[in-house]
Length: 398
Image (cartoon, rainbow, N blue to C red; front, side, top):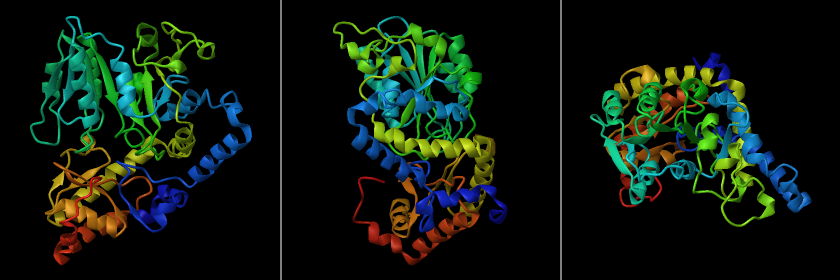
């Protein structure tokens, strides 16, 4: 299939692919070649224009550049703004709510990314109650149990489109319907789906969507994003705010803030402009390829990777049905952590997560033979006992 794969023409746009088997897009997407030029443009602009750069494009950049997400998210122009990270984006939304009333429950699944769990639990200090829906199998969150947890006391549901450990695709349409029937809001985390699983936030009727360019969007760190359903904007007053959200930022007024009525309403402090320069190239590439084409290849390669791993005798943490699988396969051989370290040493870029194993994430630029190679390499590491070299040196970053 590789020889006839039209998406492989994009490989030349990613320098690291020339000498590395890059299978870690679920954590950090490969850097597009154009990012170096974009960051040079940032440096040149700062050097030549100095403070004038704010009036010449930097100030509007968190929303203007976010319009490149419209074909990826299904959002409209001016409906998305960049944030430094997903934790802050979700915290801004949670700061809009009062947990002192009868509606005070936050519902989330036990397999959510820890940052969001910590954030939800921290809201207990403001009066929130949390309802945690456990996983019965370590792969999925049972939809009916999650829906049953959403009741008349629920204020917010926090849910990932794709779970980070198992790549299980949750039925977010059903979750949104149930939440809205109960009068609750949903914060939808699309970090593990944006750029690899099709999404239409308008068609879903999504309330709030958070995600970032770090992973499948090949945009680097510091460029997360926040979508707020336009009809909700005026009803919400974030307490986590700052001067970027003020109607007249450069009036430097004191006292209570007068909030803007557009996507700037949910911004806070000064944005990280270099991160936004870095994010643009990946967004352009993903939009040009199209998420549907990426998804089609992903479904095929994920199925192939699962088959290869199982044939080699390695347990796999993955949903059973192809339609419920995101872009990542967790392979869990013996000594998985040590094997993952040896793979990195051999220029096979993967990561390790407790309770899952070695996460392997093919993307549109992945060749089929690279999937065969990584499974073969795992077998060689085990057979040769090369993993033993990593037993005594456990890295903080895995």
